[in-house]
Image (cartoon, rainbow, N blue to C red):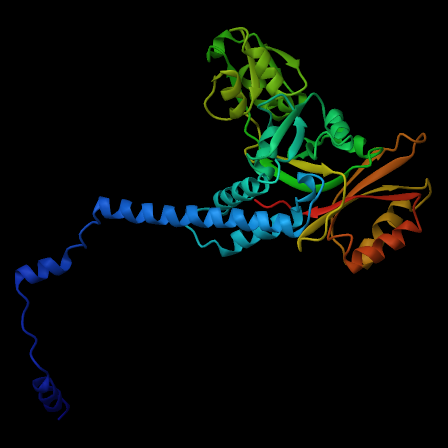
Length: 391
């Protein structure tokens, strides 16, 4: 009976007309490719819209400046916490196909150009031109800022403190080689504040005028660069003379004068000083080699919503002193990102601790922890509260 019903039901179904061979072939074909001229016309239209919107943004940026009233200089218009908030929104909105890093770079350059309508910021950095410090300046402030190459990290602090530079960018630690001690030591006596941070991927290249490895008899580089490439140098150039210099760019400047000299530096130094890559790939031992830079200025800024606080703590020489330093932060639920000890240079065997904490000094938990800490140590100095680095 079931078989009979099945046949009856199937008999009621409408018979689908068979498609011709040509129709089946047409259905299987992919859509026709777009006409190149039409695609380019659409791109041109989008470019016009983008340009109009950038101009509109620049006009509104000028209105922001007028709303703040007449201020003394460009540095008075700069708000790192607002910039960080804008860039985080760019990342949050991104759905591809461009990467977060690419879009952040585009928007940072737009903001840099808009701010420079008032007056370009003057940024001191460890020079000469072509250093990784200069790359950090460009990444954080954009190409509309005016870079001031200086001879040493100490000089960067001095020029910012004197007001000859609005901000400075100084290296503070490397992922493989640790802390840059001279930067920490400057904070022991400097009144400057940390206003931001930059994380920069560092790719070290072997550069020379001839581009021939067999010509090399001596290499110029900053001591940090020698440390970051020590394994490669031992394996490939064990007998070559290594000459330390104040910066990798200075090494590149010296290496351009002779065919038997080389330098370890970044790609930008190769372009600036007309050198060739001896080895096409980077030669650092750590593929993820990253240097963290600090932005230094003359004041603290408000919270951005995702901040880090750096403090300097001078301790009494007594049992349990380090416990007294750390316990207030644990009690108030504040994460510690980093701790580093240095001689205080104030008394024999007296030490200062540099500590990075999650949060801003205006957060209630941070206020309570710092007040509690102040009762147990010789001195607490807030070095800065600043936005966590945006990619």
